[in-house]
Amino acid sequence: MKTTLLIPALLITVFSFANSHNTNSNKNTKIEKPIAEKTKIQVALLLDTSSSMDGLIDQAKSRLWNIVNTLTTLKYDGKSPDIEIALYEYGNDGLSKQSNYIRQIAPLSTDLDLISEKLFSLSTNGGNEYCGAVIQDATKQLKWAKDNNNMKLIYIAGNEDFNQGNINYKEAISNALKNDIYVNTIYCGDKTQGINELWKNGADYGKGKYFNIDSNETVRYIATPYDDEITKCNEKINKTYISYGSKGSAKKMNQETQDKNAQKVSASNYAERAVSKSKAVYKNESWDLVDKVKDDKTAISKIKKEELPKELQNKSEAEIKTIVAQKTKERENIQKEIGELGKKRQQYIDMEAKKTKKQDDIGNAINTSIIGFAKVKGYTVEK
Image (cartoon, rainbow, N blue to C red; front, side, top):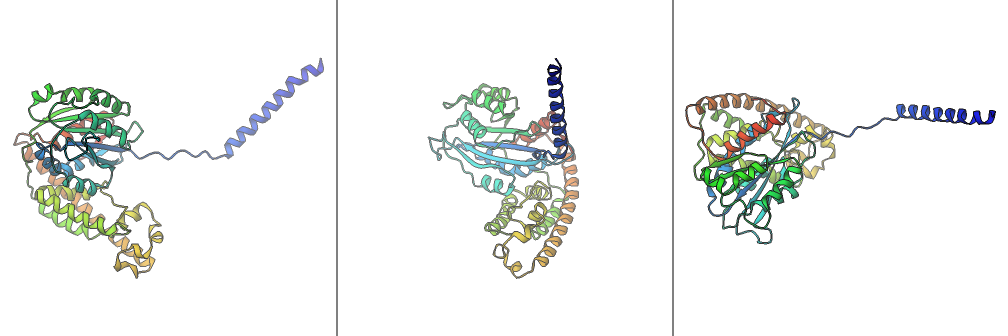
């Protein structure tokens, strides 16, 4: 009888010891929390490049930096999200039939100069416009973020029937929604015709917005008294970039090329780009030493001499650090100046815009819906 009583008592003692040991062990063991992914706003632009869409492409070129500047007004928990943009073209007979006449021009990327470069390289030809297929490709091929606080948007712009091709657009959109990606449609033509050709149905199915635009209308800009000052600041800010690495020199040249592309569109568009370059979203750590050091304080010690521009190859590490620090401060001052001018510029534009009818172009369509989605997703808008 005594032996029987001892067994449960012994088990309780052993269990209590094990539990106490585990508790102490847990106290001493540091549990590493997974690093939270920075909030992202991801926008995929799917552009019809069939023969009737020259005006659409011109509008996209004209509005890229305006769209970027709208995105930079958004904050989540008081912080600026990373902005990634992707580009697809579809409906171009110059593309292969096997690919459904679709091409990924650029993946989701923070490299805004790359997006500009690819956008300005587009030409129209043909074609067969398979909306379901290009939505499916964008959904499956792009690296979409996982967390619910990210904002993920597809904008498909074009004309003709929305249900062309052998990929059912409803199934493609359903797959997008499963990944919390909202699909918006922009019909290039009459509103009622776009509805009849199922573009509104596509937006409704994708929990997005339906727009119609006159793609042949040239984007109207409002010139401001601040544009010239912003242009001068942009010329100064370019001198603060220090290229490095195998692609550094080419990337720096591309930065200047995209300045020229923006300027060819209009002086106002050039000012829009300069304002974008003053924001944290315009970052080039892959080729610019100033941005790289912000990202990695030890970067200078890791870069080989031959990867630096010639004027820095004979400098000591300490000297290079001093130069980078000077360029960093100089850039921050110029960015601040552009930021202040940019706010005044936007206030002027907002006042003047009230005097005229709002233009229905691809930029205004995208900007309007972005602000609407942002509020639903819990983002704040700070101008």
